Image (cartoon, rainbow, N blue to C red; front, side):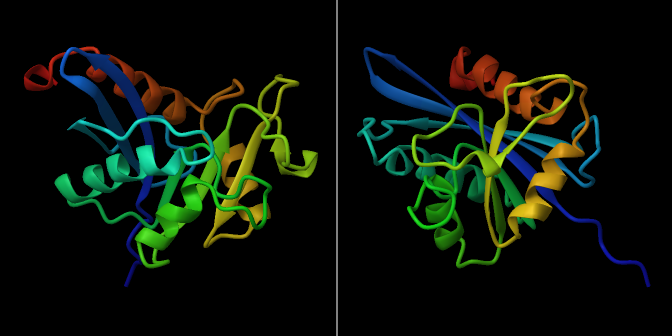
Length: 183
């Protein structure tokens, strides 16, 4: 009997505002192997009336968007890769990923991939991909840091940002710039 392949999900959220208020477009890319170069599935959800950004409480804005994507598309990943941090200091100060892990009852591993360093994050959380000298900062919960870093390092793409993480960023931005009825 063969084991079912892992279900990996990369997510990203794009925000916009108009006369109706703040809205968001959250995109997800499902894939099964860390080195996949193409998604197995893409998903998009549009959210109206998102919470305002509050410094230090970013998760309150982004978490409901990710949870809506999971619910609307009946996604049950083994691991979710977010654009941001699981822990803001690497180990104990909760970030978006920690709150997401908690909201999913600790059943899903979360990897945070941040493009910029948070002031309290040690350099040991950074990995360099391709020929880039600028690191990506990796944090995780439900998966040890070494495995999370190795997983992101082996993702497809020769540049700093893995192919599928770049694609999910583009997908949410492009879909977020279209009216919800056309996405």
